[in-house]
Length: 284
Image (cartoon, rainbow, N blue to C red; front, top):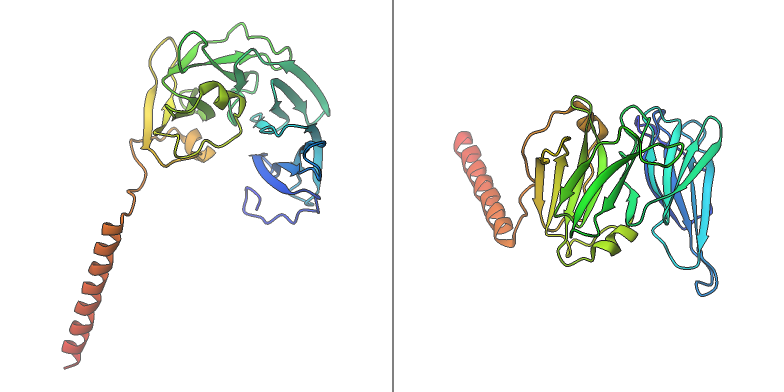
C-alpha cells in the first residue's frame, strides 16, 4: 500500500523476498528484492534495490549486488525532497541522484555505518554516519559528511551517545533541528557484530532496553523521550510524529500475564451476569 493509502499492484519481480526500505514523497516505495541462490555453496544471494512506482506498479531498479556469503543488504535513506537516495552495502555508501541517474560512491571510515533512515540532514546538504568509538565501549558518535566528496563537512558538529550496543537515526525534530535516535541496549551482544549486521534485527532475548532520544549539540547530554524494557526487537516512529516535535514521556503497553488474562475474563463474566440480571429485572 502506498504512503497515501493507495494500493499498488506490483509487477512480478521474480524474487524470493521483498523488503520495504523507505518511502518517497510521491508515495512510491523503495524496495529491496532478494533472490536466494539455487546452490548456496557456489552462488550468492542477489540483492536488488529499486523504486516501486506508485503510479504504474513497475519496479525501477537502480542497484544490485551478489555476494557468496549472505550479507545484510542495503541500508537506505532518502533526501527530504526525494531526489537522492543514499544506500550502504558492506562498507561503501552510494548517493544515487534520481533526476540525473548519476551515482557518487565513497568508503566509510572503520566501524561506521549509514546512520539510519534519517541519515540526510533536514536541508538535504549533509549525510550522517554513525561510528562506534574503539577506545570507549559502546560510545557512538554522529558525523556529518559532504554527500559529494564523502568527507567530513567543515561545519560538522559532534553528537554522541554512550551505553548503547546499536543506534539508528530515525528522523529530525523540525522545531529544534535535532536528530532523533533509537538506542538498543544489548549487554550480551557483541557491539562490532551489530555494526557489521546493521540491517539485521537484534533478537529480543539480547535486548534489555530500547530508548528514544533527542540528541543535543555543544556537548549537552541527550534528552530521553521514551524507554522500553526488554522483549522489543525493533522500534520505528512515524515521520509526521517526529516532524511535529510533540513528544511526551511514555512507555509501551503493559504485558498481559496469565493471571491478568484470568482476572480480565472474570471481570467480563461478572459484567455479563450483572447485565443479564438487570435485563430480566427490568422485564419483570
